[in-house]
Length: 507
Ligand SMILES: C[S@@+](CC[C@H](N)C(=O)[O-])C[C@H]1O[C@@H](n2cnc3c(N)ncnc32)[C@H](O)[C@@H]1O
Image (cartoon, rainbow, N blue to C red; front, side, top):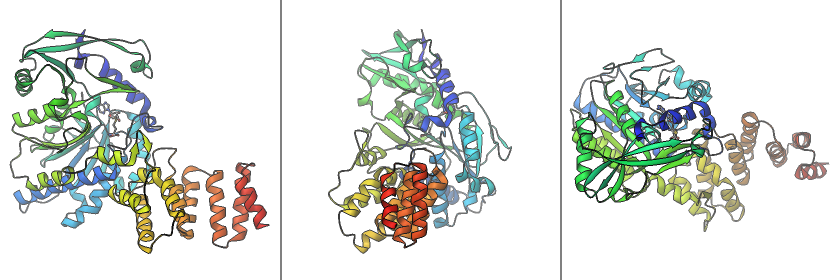
């Protein structure tokens, strides 16, 4: 039996992510939409810019020779980093701020993830102009970050500006301790893990046993954490709660990189409301390839306020997916930062958008008319994944009625937006094909052709993209090309009926 944070779980978790690499995000082995979407990226970019404005007001005349470092920890696939970079690119000029005033650092524990970013075409321009760097970084062990592109090492006190740390779906994978309060007494939850499977099956086959030991509230060497425990011991009804010690360790490491404060943007499954803590049941360890625990956002809020920092939390504290902005003790007013955070999270939260788009993990196809769907797509900023998931429904609604000029223009602009943020990741999500099909449905045949050809280029030729090139050529009166592509379709799939019918029609 051992404390949860000292158990093998975390080592095994690191082994899991190290081995699986970017494959974790194929076939939804690990979910990504709720933590990696355009809305969240715009919200983060707005908070980052607001913090830079707060700094500018407090430091008139100081320059941007040293950029603001934005360090993403547990980056994973990289789609979210790309979105944040794109958003910053879009928004910084609105404030006459040069894009070079920020430097984005993608980090992860898994070598395969880092290598995939280094190869990814979407990042090459950002590497070239020095806005982006990458590093291997273990959030629970490393105390410096060795950047692989610039070969600079970020060590203690290396930076003189406030540092940003972005962590989406990371803290739920870093070590936690678990405690119970029973009749105003504190108990440490200890765990024993039984599993002899290898990394792939380790968690699926694991059996967990728990015991409960009485402990004092001087449990940690960190007095602020002990105060959090003391507060819970006194105020909670009988409950089980966790402390994200691995996450806190990482915060303290990254904080030391700068002589200034740290701004943490944290998004994760978690509890921001103590009414949602479990009763005196076993800690809730969910198994899904790897494992994850609910992050105690409330404990982090206490921890930051006890160390003279600030916590901005989503107004919907009941949502299971929480976003928060935690700031360590700073030396200037941060009104813009606070405003930017609350402007983004006072109303709908990421979980609300997901609930509008998906019903029980299935795509929502239930729209009374096309304006409802266009409204939703506008709300999610034509996020590429959602556009992909909804393209069939959109095409059906286009085909079932007459589009107004306004609707036509919204769709053309929306498809453009989706394409601007295209980041190739999921092998089964051929966004160019989806966009080609939307353009075809609204009779934009030149654009449709361009995107069906992109589908061939990005995802390889298949009967669907080749046949669609054929019918688009037919719509453009390029009958020889239409015939050629119908023939090419049959070379790929000799039984593809629509191509046979098209050839017969063209003959
Ligand atoms: C659930 S994924 C989240 C990925 C991405 N941020 C997202 O929101 O989709 C967790 C990521 O954290 C990384 N990770 C796990 N343990 C880590 C550690 N100790 N230090 C740094 N990264 C870690 C994994 O490799 C993985 O990429």
